[in-house]
Image (cartoon, rainbow, N blue to C red; front, top):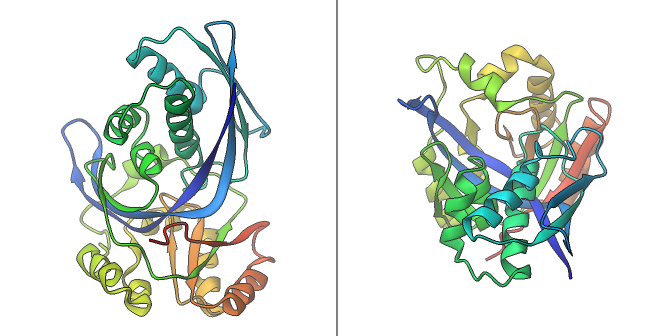
Length: 285
């Protein structure tokens, strides 16, 4: 049996760091939504009781280090399944970009195996299992627009954003979240106004949305990688109505109401970095 799943990228409309927890994780509050840049995950049943993973990216491991492999192993273990699967991932989402590509691949594996092996696990069960794999996986299972709390694993659905275009720009660097959070100084962070951002979603107010998007990690990432700040500044100079770094970076997302303006931002960024995309939001409820 062969089954296909799309694994969409996520962007942060906001990311706030509230404090350090006793378990070593930071307490966060972040609003996320999905865009139509997606990996393609193919699942094939195999006779042997094993898990095989292959990708078309040299930057992604093809063994048990891959989070998609870990997702399949966790699913088989939880539901005591003795069946095998081959996972083939076509990568379209940039790697180590703050766009949740690996987490979305893992979420796609959980959703796909649930269907392929007729387990009939609920979304809540998959989200609980996904939380053991990574803080972005629960959101990627849900995939609409949501606020994540705790260390990101506690998900509550929000209203969908107003329709707009998103320009994604990633410089030629990769950033690991675990290298950014230890450098966070809670006393100097600029905190986004999450409450007002939620109100802008409820009111479908694009101008207010662009005013209140924000990421508390920007100051940390910008100090280590000034090119990321230059990309954000260039987005705003060339016409983006709002711009925000996604996750711990380095990708910056610029929001525009109209395609013509998105194209102008896109053209303005091509000299700054090779990976630039014009995408749309998936959440069109």
